[in-house]
Image (cartoon, rainbow, N blue to C red):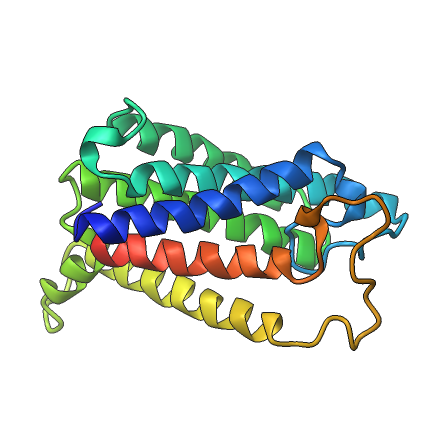
Length: 219
């Protein structure tokens, strides 16, 4: 990622913490509620939501830890070149896009499409790091020619991704401001680790949205 090294380290710390939180959720039982918006309430026994919770936690953990690694200075990218990151997240994007087509429920389909878009944005960022797209979506948008017809599609794609994740961060922040305790949610389920505390999943979604927006802006 381009930009000040301090920004990269800060972004790596935030997204890494969010990814680790979802990894803890995945390892300690999705029955207590995952990182997915609209997931089953903590302590509920809604079995149809458990698989979706685990899938969401796995996807968010992968995205968070991947974003943390890619946000580090180039010399510390876990030994993987940008092309490898692009290939890995390209497979993730294809898997979620295919899974979304097999879902009948609108919420499940939209949720998997969101993960597909997120993985696709990681591919875009990795390509930018490799010099194949330009220095981030902001650079692509600023170098586009607004009045030119039939121009390259990548500047438009970068701008759309920026709008999407900027809007997603605002949406996640708005949901986080809703008083969960006032709505009757328990503070922490009995015996559950701190990763299952109400509001923490929403905070992770907010961090993911802001982190992806920042990576697209400075990638």
